[in-house]
Image 1: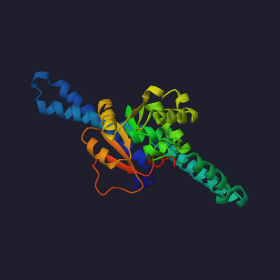
Image 2: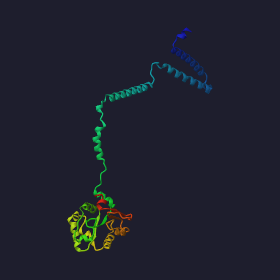
Image 3: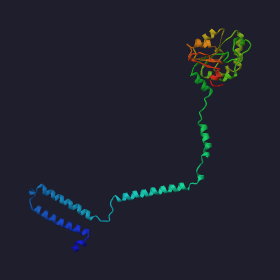
Image 4: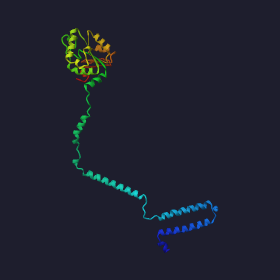
Length: 284
């Protein structure tokens, strides 16, 4: 009893294996002494199970007690990664703590840059040409009355004395001729008035732009004649000051601009009203 209590667990396992080996040897000798055909399935299964148990027990005992398992390096690697991540966090915190207030840019220092950015991204104001094309809705042909729109005078009787082109409409006329086929027309009382109007237009430089020629300035002796001109030309836009003519043409012309200081009470949906063509196209 004293020897068994003082012996180590390894010695006890070794003794157990020796006994098992002796038992297996006895069984094997007794089995092989018997003819193989006399063995049943139970005996063969018992022998195989006993042999497997002995093999696994022997492998477990032979493994040195101090040998590390295979998963231990992985745990060590994880602990190393954790320690390195902790070191990186500590370095980042120390770097943040070392930053002085002078290193941080104050908001008011970026005001100049922000102002430049705001100015750069401000909406661009459209040019007069763009506004004219937008208002005309890409209309390809425009007819326009002279009196009260292009000329300072407002009646044929005044044309017998003089003809004066409004300086404020020249730029608008130039843009209209760039994008559309423009025709000017007016009622006159005599040939002298006709010549006077053509001379005034030429002096103002209307014909030098290249978009308008004298053949596109039409004259008639009545209001009905001007209405006939418009219907024959079939423009996309007609500009006039006479509300009766705009009302008559509303059924035939796609769009009209009625130039008047006062807006009429009733107008067709396709008739627009403005105090001048400069104001309508955004030039005034």
